[in-house]
Image (cartoon, rainbow, N blue to C red; front, side):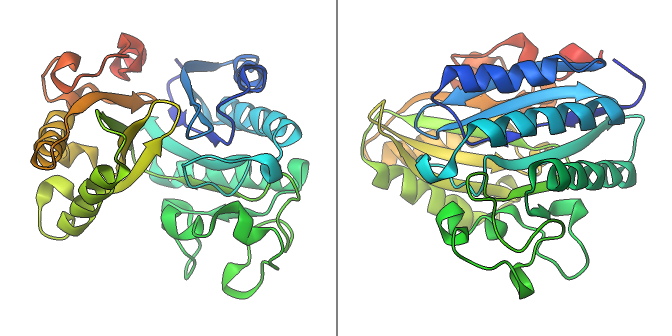
Length: 301
């Protein structure tokens, strides 16, 4: 890998058509100096997540190339899935990993946003570190209402994008771009089809954020994976250094047991720092689909 390394983890609103997912992945892999280290797709979320590493110019080219494929192949008017989403390129985060800075990552996110606004005619919103002064920085707030809320709305006033036109792209929606710190996307699937169990657990997590260090920075939703007939606690750990996966797993398992359910498996989306496992083996958290390549240190040395 080059001396300056960024991680980019774009989320695309397609998890069912393999040919589209592969076309997006191919667009990334064709860019010199970039390494696609992981990608996964989920039928019920109807979403795929790509994780790639590279220098600033490589990441910019790969992000824009993949985005162009996604906007040309995904029609949000036909899209359905349990995960919140607002566009074909739903969210595109940039994370500085090595020999680079927060300010440089923000500058890179602005260049990517400008390219996507121009080449794909998308309204672009910047979030997290890249949010403009006085603008919304939180991803859940920007995604509130989903694509459907954007279709006929004029994007003006408090809803005006940072770049691009005042109407959502008719098939591509909007795109949210930003630099941020590392995040762990972690799902725990329960051995029950009763989504109320997952929703109660997710609510407990949200309520505990303000007074429990373990849950600080954890965003949680309770979802139903219809194709598997299983409820899921879907989480984003935005401060993973405070939130080791084994501790999260044990807490969710205990809450599920209190409601007469059990844990089937857990899954990590993308790549994570080795420290997230707190020195424990992947089987501790029933991470059945674990791959060593999902550990960032495998690539960074």
